[in-house]
Length: 275
Image 1 (cartoon, rainbow, N blue to C red):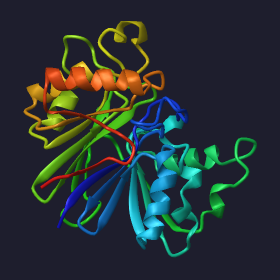
Image 2 (image 1 turned 180 degrees about the vertical axis):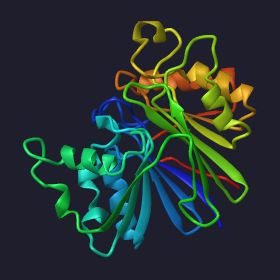
Image 3 (image 1 turned 120 degrees about the horizontal axis):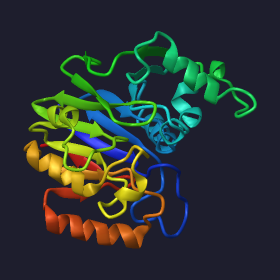
Image 4 (image 1 turned 90 degrees about the horizontal axis):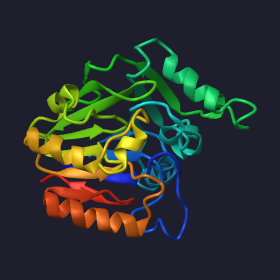
């Protein structure tokens, strides 16, 4: 069987390639869930390019890509996803933040690759691609034995949170969501209840948050509060602000672990296997 989560991109807003963003990584959002023989991908940030190279090396021939939303940092790796150009590869792409309108997610990804912003159109991707729009709140069954529960998140232009249940374990991917101080988000609490791992939008600190209300993001302290309230086993601090360099992140990691030892700070290349 086997249930493994690998982080291919952990940064928010914009990719960071600098000597100050090495230890924690600079690629934008992309996670790979290995569920037995099945591959489930979450978000298509710049980390997707490296994941694509890995899938080719491993001889993988199919995957399902689920998007939280379509802001640039979550889709700008898609045009560089090499397996999508391979006619022998099958790729299903799903999104729940566009109201379930048929063809909506395909249109957005095609627009990203259209003139004058990109020279290679979506039509050059010769893989067997299927597009599916659903409504956040639905329960999905992408593979046999895999249940994906979804919920709507508080974010400009909407976003979707995911809970992936497989082999008796549950991992939640909850990013690009803004909390209201003192009012725990009922959608998030319901989604993450009793989860083994929650990957949560921890873009800011509580001190930074008041100056960024309305930007659509949360804090690592709120992540801990939610996980404690929902009896979660482990929190992965994720979607790091580009201004949070390695020195800042190391201090944040130490403080977060002191507050709750169930925390881990996500890094590019990090893997978590659920025993």
